[in-house]
Length: 236
Length: 107
Image 1 (cartoon, helix red, strand yellow):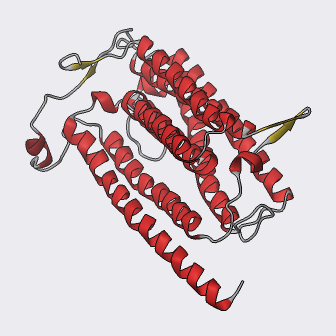
Image 2 (cartoon, one colour; image 1 turned 180 degrees about the vertical axis):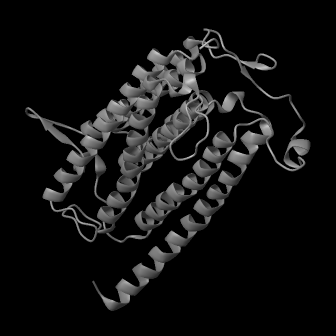
Image 3 (tube, one colour; image 1 turned 90 degrees about the vertical axis):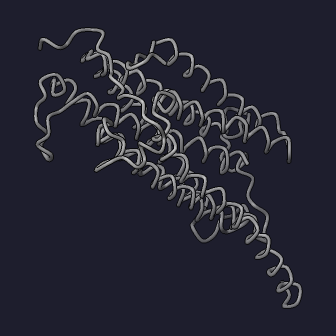
């Protein structure tokens, strides 16, 4: 391809005033790729879903008469003779941040049309994401064998179980879907779809490296949600 | 921001990446060290907001977006804070009702 030179610059549309852009004729946010705008709108709606879960967690935790289980102990692991608090959760947090970093670099190399680097970084992101899901499965197994159920648990307030399975389950579903799409996109990158502009299977639209940025937005959002879950559910 | 063009040097990604690691380590340290009540909650919230801010601004490229788009994303989210405020009061009300009920009915 002739256009696969190194320093491709992304053009930003001209600046317009705030009111002009929002009151724009026919369509808003002219010049923004529609896929990206749609992903942002989806992410805003997803933010609402996750915040409703976290708000219901707050409501339930503040209104229960029973003692709330101490997450630091519940999620602690025995390493040798030591009891390390929240060890698995900390590792999961670091893995998700690592995957977020590789994703950000993949987007950068995607815009530079560096096919190989973009592909390897996408693959790394997918593998880190898959290991995160694996650890979450381990965590669920551990808690279920300890007798944690959505309606009861041996540590304290029965609401703990339902909130735990709901929030981490919903987040884990997001990660799993993300991993599946990351693998699909990795294949597309390595096959050169974004360089040749091969038409998509479902959409028949020409492929473009913008898809990598849209994928990146989703993946960073999953990391973003984990930041809030980590703070409010595991640390609070 | 360069007028009309968008170029992100590798350096800024590595900087934010490292920063996210450090901030995560700090929030883990809050639990490890055993801070309690207000000190704990404040520290957790500070590290959380910093991490969320950096992910949103740099990794999700929000920093380089146009203001109308940033507003379209962030403005609806402010409604969440209103909902948090409402449910916060609601939950204390529920707790009071429960306490009164259990005091009268026993258990």
